[in-house]
Length: 311
Image (cartoon, rainbow, N blue to C red; front, side, top):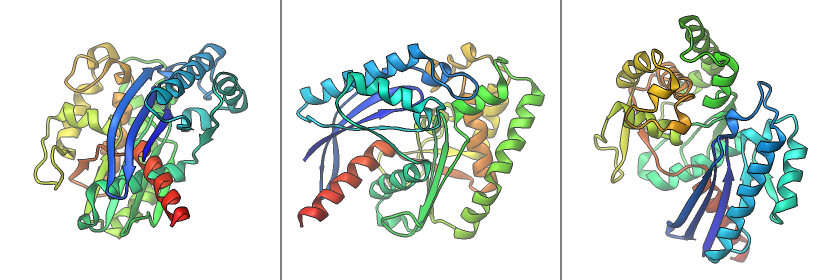
């Protein structure tokens, strides 16, 4: 069955088309519109009219592209940048004026559950008890379990874009005091979750999202036998060294580093601090980088439900 999802995220609107069936998921086509919405909201997350128009236009373009690839009704969803915006009704109204496909707002915990579903299908049950970490632009999700569905799913306000906006306040690079204060804040937010993960003792821990992927490339750590072809690992020791470098550089210079894109260079330090703090407080020496995340999880979930209803 050919299906498509449109993901309205903090940095991009992305269309993902795939063939989805009982044996898994095969990507067919993907395209993205880079909007950098996280940089166009004010400190409390309110999105301006220009940004709302850009978002609505991109979602409408993604829906038209989806139809060209044979999917008339893509699944459109938005995450923290829309979900947590004080003017969320106005944003949804702007999208509705340009696109006749309804927009789903996924709660953070549901994001974590669907990301776990995708990671579990990617790793397979041979991975055993599994924990999944995901750093978005507006939130941080984590989930763990020992089966096809997550036993625990958590969402915290630790997105890389949100933290950059709220804690670094336009300081580029941030001051040592700002970096120290952010570390303390992140650790406080993670205390309860990290204790739960340590107690659960997962056999496999994977990390999803562009933030983790770019950090793994920056740290240049290749896979050491994680069990998936082409997989990479992010090692905490290498990440700790990378943070020392990132915090000394302005965003323009970070964008010249291996793996760090210009679009995410400003938030790369905050993302690295969240990743390193999570790994340290959860007693993780490394995590396996998983290419499947929320988009794959949404498609797999809808496909599973349709099959169950049909059979």
